Image 1: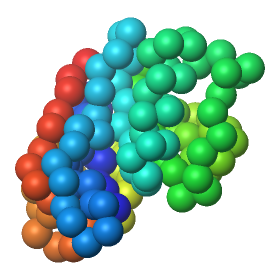
Image 2: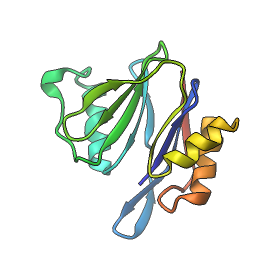
Image 3: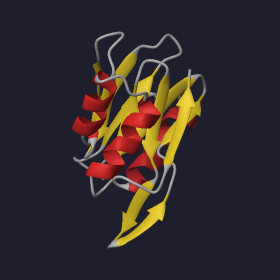
Image 4: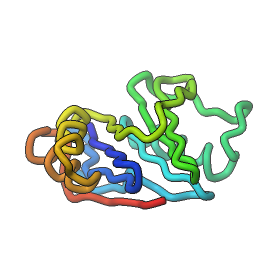
Length: 142
């Protein structure tokens, strides 16, 4: 699926997307309109989530309906982290100052960051352990 990791300064994500059994590189972390965000789940849902942020300024009336397996995290310029999941994109504020990760490799990434790894290093470690994480790492910073 994916690994997205936030260490308080950097948001990093792997590049693996699959169509059937074929892995294809793609970008999953972005810096748009002063916010950072990363997505996990279907590629089309990531595109719709990005469009909702980029084109519609997160307007509730323009919120897309996404697959129930979608998850995303958005980091405001202040460092405030909000988790979005499922089809209705209910915003869930996360505790300030915490490291966070999502996707199939999230537990590996969180463990790596707790042991001192950066977000990038955490995704690299997750890619060694999670079969659905790989093809390199992208990162964006506040």
